[in-house]
Image (cartoon, rainbow, N blue to C red; front, side, top):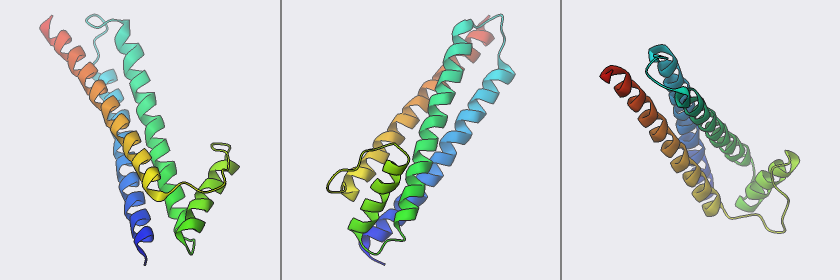
Amino acid sequence: MSDWQVTLRQTSRWLIIHGAIGAAAAIGLLAIGVIVHDASTTGLWFFLILPACTVVMLGQSAHLLLDAALFRLALASDSEEAALRSIDTRLHAMGLRRLQGEPRALAPRIAGTRRLLRRQYLVLSVTVAILAISLFEGARI
């Protein structure tokens, strides 16, 4: 197995794990928020921001899982360039990206997934903070 295949395999495994964790955390935090929510102590902002954060986290988890699936499908290719071209072809077929002359290298693609993962965990932190503030305000009254 060549280096690019090892990198794709490890990255796809890593994306699957973090995508599943993000989705489970989003659903879990929304469930906790709904269960412990006291309508008399928190305002309407709680019902607007918490579901919005959950939707964003679920969307980013789906994006991570899509990237993982594309990386796994690219592993069937014989060369790195063919694998990257197959990713671009599939993204074009789904209407998500236009075909360009040369496929993007593997390193920028992995850097993009890391940026997406950082955004997902930022939204997770905001969601936890919102839930903590809501619970703190409910306990204080």
